[in-house]
Image 1: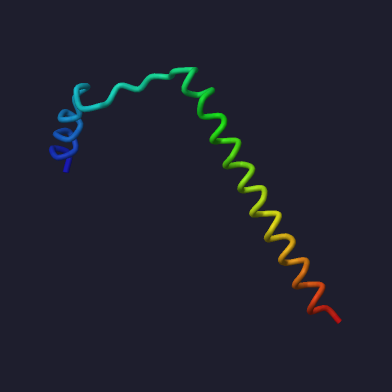
Image 2 (image 1 turned 90 degrees about the vertical axis):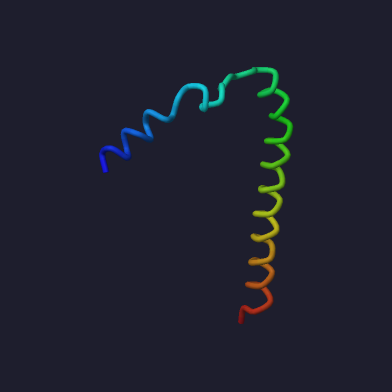
Length: 61
């Protein structure tokens, strides 16, 4: 088991691992999409709350 683990660790050379970098411009560009996603989530939660309230109103005594 240890031989397999050490072989896997040795095979993970830096050439296989992709380069990760941070570009602030891309982060600012993606804020628009994150905002739209948050707005859609807010609207869906609001529709669920309205549906539950309407169901509660219709089926209450």
